[in-house]
Length: 151
Image 1 (spheres, one colour):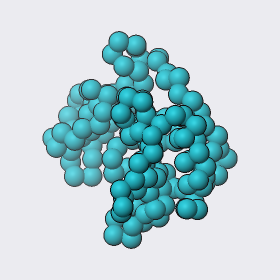
Image 2 (tube, one colour; image 1 turned 180 degrees about the vertical axis):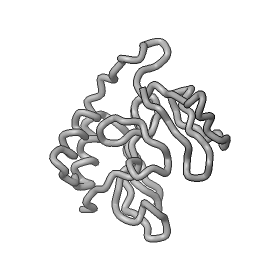
Image 3 (cartoon, one colour; image 1 turned 60 degrees about the horizontal axis):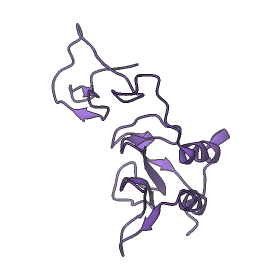
Image 4 (cartoon, helix red, strand yellow; image 1 turned 60 degrees about the vertical axis):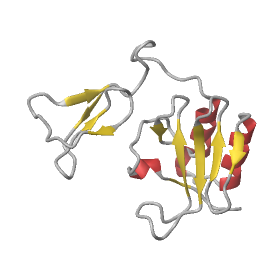
């Protein structure tokens, strides 16, 4: 269980449907918002995904290592996912269910927290995660996991 508090602009985060949504309301300190970050309603709070990709990610990021983009590209390919890229966009790997699981970005100096090469991840349910499987929000630092660009 994760207790979520008041944001910098006075709002609160809610995860009622297992995805973070901005409510824009002041935190009710008498009734704090609590979210279960694991599981789905039908599988219970102790459900853990059987995700080989996530296991591979944990290995690449172990001991503070920063993986290379090519290593992540190979890991996604080994899952049988489909690679796509527009002429000016990032590399995206989509799973068999149509969920973009991995986005590999070179980075842009115009975007805060996205200046350097990084990846953005989603679990098999489409929720944003860090390399260790923890749920993150769109603009959180953890949603932009650093990589070494070697393409």
